[in-house]
Length: 115
Length: 109
Image 1 (cartoon, rainbow over the protein chains, first blue to last red):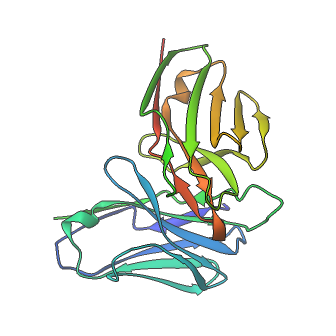
Image 2 (tube, rainbow over the protein chains, first blue to last red):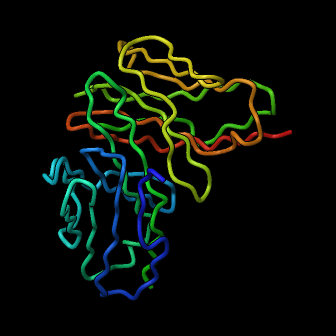
């Protein structure tokens, strides 16, 4: 199936731990994103990569480090997890096209709970 | 700033028409998108307006007025399955989407 996939779907961990979330898209898109959605459903961009190059880096703590080994993958590593990091993290991808609509395709999300 | 404002909640009955408004900041604006998100699900794309006017896709339509920094999503012939959160999202430079706070739509019998 063509899609954006993320692993794991659920992640429960202790404060201070380091964890990674993986994302893969097989849509052939050249741009990938990470978003954070908090408990009030506010959805905020964190990072975007275009062909493995960092394009958007919002004011995210440097404990968060994205890595794009190739244009089909964008992983998110989080160091020293804090309670406030608990949220749903969505990966997304799109094909940049100035004549089109920049539709972004979202993965199913990773629900991170920090205890 | 890049904030977007939309109502937090709208309730309507099945078969009705509902309009969800969105106002946005104009700085570096390329276009306005709308996304639907069911509880526990991922956001899914509904529509995009770069130019003024109405875009229609089945029961859903989206409107943009760049001069008024305003857009809306119109949902017709509401069905129970339309109960979800609806987000407007402003496209800026670098294909960056800034999402509004979302409107929870409840469709009742």
